[in-house]
Image 1 (cartoon, protein in one colour):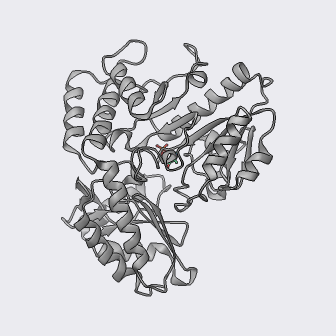
Image 2: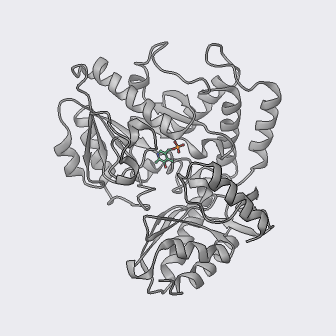
Image 3: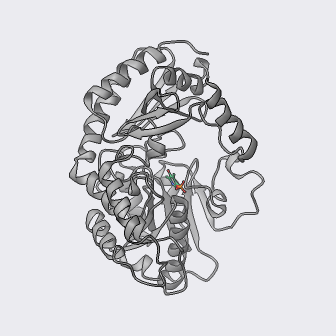
Length: 404
Ligand SMILES: *Cc1c(COP(=O)(O)O)cnc(C)c1O
């Protein structure tokens, strides 16, 4: 490491809250699937900022939309209308087939907004007694870091010493439809779930799970809230991961790639009933729905479709998964994935996944470990066949090493 890199790390350590443990690389530039560090080394980004830069780093069309809008108007607050909000609503509703849209900023804010909305729906439409609404969630969920959300996390690291937490959540195992059936009670207003659990290590539920979940929610008048903040917008090879089982959520949460990584933009999408319960003054955000965010999101959605990124994610993801499965290495316990949301789980004896990520870094690939033994792989959706083969060669040589 050069002295300048050490200076960056030292300054971060001195002044920053130590709530992250980043890999020791200082990035200064990105283009498409590639990023460069301050020394000029190039890496294939196999994390994509947890799927926020699905459209590739610094996509020129999103950049142009952002710069153009930044020259014209950036923020009005929702006290006034702006000329980007209506087209953003129309375009996101047309893309996703939803009826109503609530624009927010971070993913966690979208989750919080959905929780507020389904509770209000529960009291005002379903007729649940005030203060009694229950929401069912899954073990090992990840829905963000705000207080409301970490209150129903099952990860001790996420929760410890942040309480007291809000009541009203029931936790069941992921992928178990019978557990949902048992958990639903008269006061249940919603089931909040990720189509694929991302932070938990790319956990894919059994086939047919969401078909059954949809049936149970419909039969019991429970709103199905799908957190597609990570799985949505093409990551799994479909626009929304719900399409893999041909179901439709009542409420869908988007974030991350909704801005192509330029700016925090999230959205709650719903049928008319749920978001229809919100009246003026009952919910809001200074930056939510601002013209800069709307212009960026419109461009981010447009390039996703126009440049065939969703189809490319399906095609390249299938090859990436097949290539990873072909690697014969004693270190590998399981390879999982759908579209370009992939993971390699190592045998515990193979050592920590972080060691393999550091070895990959030495070969020009940035990937991220999760939960000690899993390497997650999620390159931008613009990755080409040649780049997939290039990456697979490096994964093969790294995973056949013993780094325990
Ligand atoms: C990243 C993520 C969030 C939180 O998004 P932030 O923008 O970090 O608040 C919520 N849910 C899922 C599934 C995520 O992957």
